Image 1 (cartoon, rainbow, N blue to C red):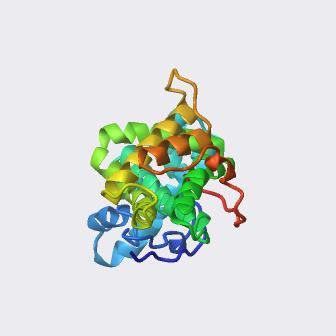
Image 2 (image 1 turned 90 degrees about the horizontal axis):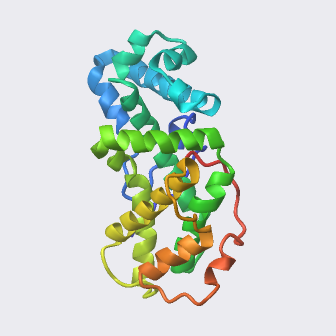
Length: 258
């Protein structure tokens, strides 16, 4: 199962290099096609540039403002364009937010892959990827941005469920590759790797909602407890305390865009 090497700089405000191809995922987020579909011929390059500027403007505002203050007017002003130009590229705020989710998930997928890239043991590689996602990524991300992203992901999952589901595909596919390797090595039960990865993603999303939005009435499990639960659920036979060694593998630290 081939995997691409990560490249470029992280963050929703990166250039095209930040949209590195990951295993099985498209090289560009879906918003590119939507924006190009609304543009005319020679104006297509300008449309993509303006759309990216608007996505970046929304990301900047999410670091400074409360979620309810993020309006189309504020985003247009931050990007230095008129609201009319904004609506030329995006149907509304949810359409723009879906584009931001798509961007962030491609970058997040690359960072997860990079965090575990040097680990030879397949099950340990999967464990380290989950540890990075649940612990280290949050430590290097602006908390106001993370809370806003959690809130808007829930919101757009209702208004644009198919697009939000597709936006998560890069991360699910990276995890699926790691799950497949662990299945091949006999460390977890053999099954459908994408289904298993989707289940891992569902658990992760619930953890993020609990962390940033506080929707759950139950105590939030520690990262190690959550990872142990996930790996045992996949049929692994990790010994007691195995998860306590996660996060000790030396690797470069980068800022996550999730």
